Image 1 (cartoon, one colour):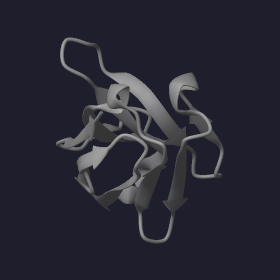
Image 2 (cartoon, one colour):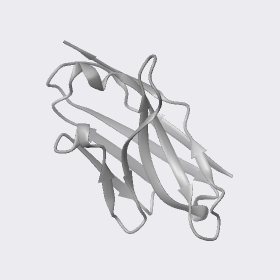
Image 3 (cartoon, helix red, strand yellow):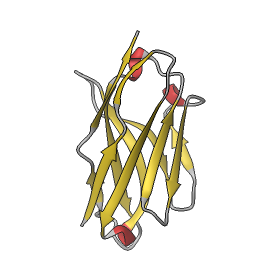
Image 4 (spheres, one colour):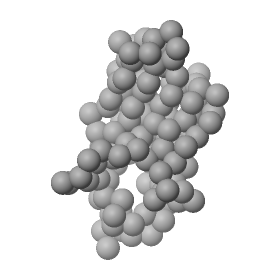
Length: 119
């Protein structure tokens, strides 16, 4: 089993920055990709950014150039640097971990952290 714990959400003015952090524990050897998703009220959960063990990152078009994902394999952590935040970035942000080829059924989620961007 993999457990995820997020931190770093909060309230920020438009144009500001926030950093989200996620720490994985438990059977972390099962993990390949880690990333962030978000869900705004009345909307479906959507991908924000993901990064593989090898360091390949992918971003949603809406956050490219503003958000940056990074990962510390040794500490089993992933961070999301969010700059030039917009009110439409307001959502609950969830950390996610997916399994590697030996553990493809792993799909772990954190409890979520609220990000609110005031206009």
